[in-house]
Length: 329
Image 1 (cartoon, rainbow, N blue to C red):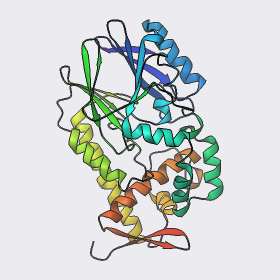
Image 2 (cartoon, rainbow, N blue to C red; image 1 turned 30 degrees about the vertical axis):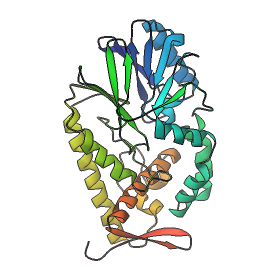
Image 3 (tube, rainbow, N blue to C red; image 1 turned 45 degrees about the vertical axis):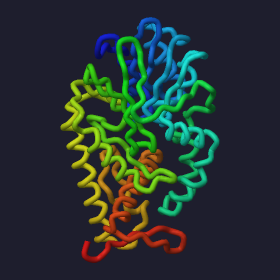
Image 4 (spheres, one colour; image 1 turned 180 degrees about the vertical axis):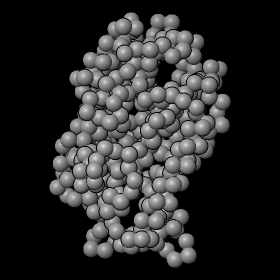
């Protein structure tokens, strides 16, 4: 499905089968004789067909198309190599390009798995998740010379438009939004979503991803956005949504700390199982495995935030990280 959202800008709905996100919002911008495609979908046939159909409907020529990625996640980057012309560019923030390269080379797997095991994630479930989780199974397989790093403040031009890069770490280490100042349009990617909350997980070699995310919400909240174009679902009131997201994480942090005070010595997996999640499952045991993995990752980012600010204490006992409240906090 395609939908014109502004002059020479269209949204292409890319189906994400079997995924609670349902659909990716890919955006196509038309220049004089070139095209710019923002985000692509999983490396999966249903995504490939949906994106191809949208481009055909709009008359886009892949050989004249550059790809601009908001971040490295495979539901955004999985088809990037297929939908950029062979002599065109695939743009991604410098930090996320580094992480994507390491992910493809499986250089982050051992460190990430070790952290999940330390948080009490069952080893058999972790092994199964590696096989079925689309974040790993349906990602890009290789990079080539078209993949080009971009930095905060850098501009990408297409036709009459200029898109200013705003690097907003949190959702990923190099997560990015793109700002069109003359039109007051913001491509928010997954930094600001309007009817679901972005997953903020713990990243390898990132001390405080949640702290980064909250800091960057504050950094961008006063942009005079008239039209916000998110990576998933519908749009809405930009500044109000940022207020709601900040409040959501304040409540989640308070909930996490309360669980630890009431149940000292729990590991991260056990704490995640006691947190409140909006998912159709009767119990933690019945959570879909991929969603359980995301939930534990998000719990870990909240634990890291609280530990860094001396709200809770982390102790390693028998190879497992356990959490305790600090008196007087």
